[in-house]
Amino acid sequence: MQNLDVTIVGAGSAGLTLALLLAEQGLKVALVEKGAEPLPANPAYLRVSALNPASQRVLAHLGVWDGIAAQAAAYQQMQVWDADSFGRIHFAAEPPQPADLGWICDNEAIRQQLYQKVQQQPAIRCYFAAQIQQLVQSEREVLLQLSSGEILLSELLVGADGVNSYVRQQLQLPLTHWDYQQDAIVAVIHCDEPHQATARQVFLPTGPLALLPLPDPKHCSIVWSAETSRASELMALDDAAFARALTAASQSVLGCLTLATARSVHPLRMRYASDWVRGRVVLVADAAHSIHPLAGQGMNLGLMDVTALAELLGKQQQAGKPLFAPRVLQAYQRWRKAEAQSMIAAMEVFKRGFSNEQPALKFLRGAGLLLADKLPFVKQQLMAQALGNSGDLPALAKP
Image (cartoon, rainbow, N blue to C red; front, side, top):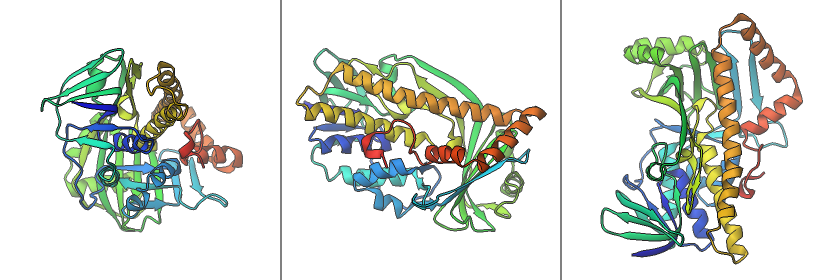
């Protein structure tokens, strides 16, 4: 039997980050993961995230950023345009802002770097390939029994176990969800023209296409979100025909495009837990919310969740108060639910606005993009959101 301060279910990037932040505070932490431990490997860039400077500051604080950055692609510009109108907007950092607007990172490479750091922390105990048999909480503790027979007792349990969260299901926490009626096609592509460290996104009538720069100057990761029927048509094409369709959809902004890897497809759904706290159990990251990938903010939202939770628990520690306090968990829920709700609403507005083919709306959104590109104040606000510098940030993430 293990007596712990916090048990974290899920050893993705959010769970690993939280474990490191809590271990810094002298807490005893267990990480329970149903999958295998992350092993060093060259990144394939098949699943990537666009980390913003707010997330970078947290990862730098933990001492893992240099390893992540060595395998990431920084981008200094962003171009967004509407394929069906004249609207477009361009972002580039202006002094005194740092040149890098963000970094395209391989998801598994992030996880590997975090896990290497976790292995150096004696306060963190890891259980990989672990099946949970029982989750029970009382007024004093949370009990987790593994299929191995091991029993973990902790003051607090955190569900960081993704969109199909076991923890959320076991506690029967209500879930709001809807189908975006789109699938995301993901692959690495070769471009005729170098990407010039620029992240690009074009809004098509059937969904957005993102071209995200990779370390190779002529390679990009694509996330092509299309209506389910259109995605099925695209997946049915052979590689050459798909490449032609992709080149046309991107309006040849990087010349002729060809596939460098196989394609994969992923259904897109919004999920949002109505309650993130139940007694001594709390949800974070994808276990609490998942959003459309069109702005690439999913990973950043999750990292801000765990940084905020660690900050609030740290204040309890510093004040010499018990780690578990209902008001602290409720404060976390209010704080992060507000941020998640804002992002979910913004993604829905973008998705609906750019998929509407009414002529008047097409004109308005085109004019809106051009106007935003010309108005310094509006553009600064949009830039702050893209950099992760807006909203109510945890202290570690602030500029």
